[in-house]
Length: 534
Ligand code: ADP
Image (cartoon, rainbow, N blue to C red; front, side, top):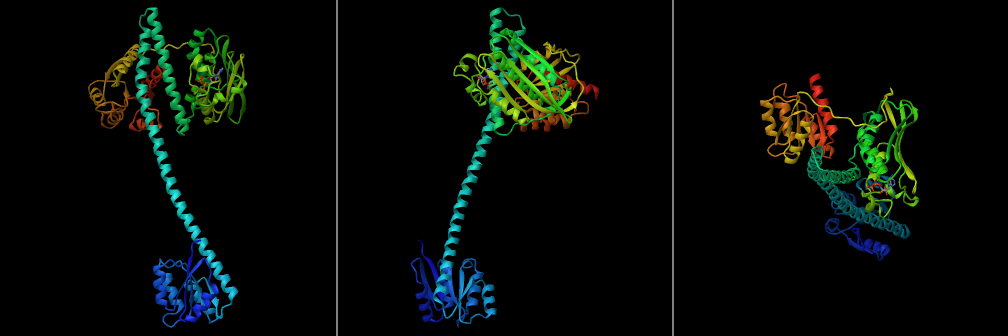
């Protein structure tokens, strides 16, 4: 055990000898002096946590000595016990305590009391040292923790940046591939060529699906996923999802049915994008894992309470079903029900994990009932605030909506990727839009000064001048009439911050690449109409 230095200061050597004899022990190191000045020097130079100091000394009395000790940071912490003969007079006791002594010993010294006091103060010193040592250790740990946390945050940021960049890099070419295969599909083709084009479409859609899933999972894990409720027409949404997947069901020769049960209000508050994602996932799985029979989506009202409504979406299929012992597993990332699922049906095992987490984030519940060989029913139940309680008649029968042609609408497109330029020009021309395409923001500014356009579609990252900068300059530098031109940002961004940057720059809306053509059509229509109305 570490020895503790104890200093005795007394002007009479015989008192020192007597005290030393009384308190001599193995775990302390006794130091002594008859001179207060020498005592000060010792306290300065050595590590002395405890001192027994005589009060009456000729050179400097004990009170003065302690005052000096207490006034110096280096010696302030020393525990001082006064040894005094001027017993029991309270004014001395008070003075001693106010200058900073911790206790008194009265002469003639009583051996048991003296050793007991010294014992307890030695104990106190040891505890204080232990606390100090632990504190230093804690501070070290804390510093390490802070460093580790900083590193983890840095790594997280690097990962997010990497994902955002990768997604941009991957989505832009996929956008091109999907658009071109769509255009190719509409041109006259022989049967073999059509098959190739179809395969091209299926593969690029599958690739896009995987990229989106991986991004979603990472965003959910990073707590970056925001649920944004807007006024949503649930019936139209369900119908749009069924219409979109009808082709796939037809290809497999299975029925895809939609049924509405109860008075479903026209508008409720929910994040339509995420609801769409949940239904798309469940229905796609239903179709994928069903070889014959049907897949049915039913949307039912369960309960109505205080302006809120509980709605259940049930996707029931007559497919392969899920073994009992695998039912819990299928909601985990990268888990599939059987060893050979990937081989037979493809997929990554991410879909249901995302659906379950989305359902949770939106405050709802996901449930599955399944019988191997008989089929499965996945239900998603949630409460919604009702915005418009009227009931709209929407036919549950599938149908394909033709995208309407525009009349006299001129679009300026800024996009630097050649494939995307070609694709988007074709798509827009098919909608009867007048199209000019440029490849950077500076050219957008020039074109807007020279000709009339009704709307601008603006890519984000372009050489010379990017989309944000160009948008900002249109909004601040252009003449009235051009200044307010509707701008849609064509973005491959997945991070909210980047979307926010686009809005901050002044865009009216964002279409995420690869874009859904009907969404792009709808947004152009809405913004152009709004401008005319204004
Ligand atoms: P993926 O479909 O990409 O494999 P999911 O996370 O969507 O991934 O599904 C996980 C697994 O759950 C699937 O691989 C499949 O084994 C099982 N599964 C999901 N939906 C169904 C269904 N409707 N019928 C049978 N099995 C299903």
